[in-house]
Image (cartoon, rainbow, N blue to C red; front, side, top):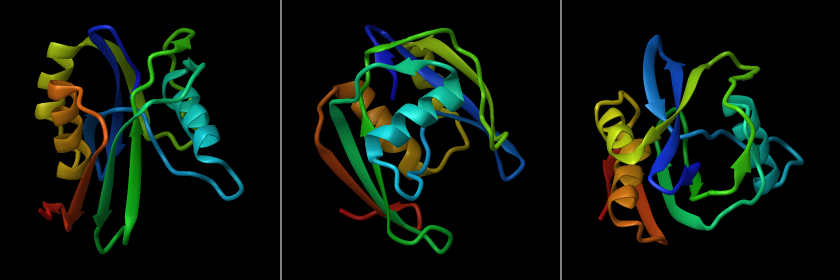
Length: 143
């Protein structure tokens, strides 16, 4: 996540024919380090240059039929520069915006993104308490 002061960057994405809002992110390619993937995904999805990674905000472990045993690390990044401009080679990200946190939380709460994508993010933005591990099976939380 790209968060600075009381603003956060959100991306609009096409998924399964629906538009949804979330924070920038993506997968690690073969031979790529996690931090390299984060810098690359931020650049592709927002046009911004990430200058520093971290700290780690939270971790989500989820399993579904489509994505078995997935681990998502979300970093709270505040050091970036550049202008917002989408350059997504996959063509899935259709927009990116810097919004005040209150407005962003409302947008995220109504997003069609999955529960494991939205619930931990909103919880973190409300508390700013880092280090929580979230686990889901088929989009249902495991306590």
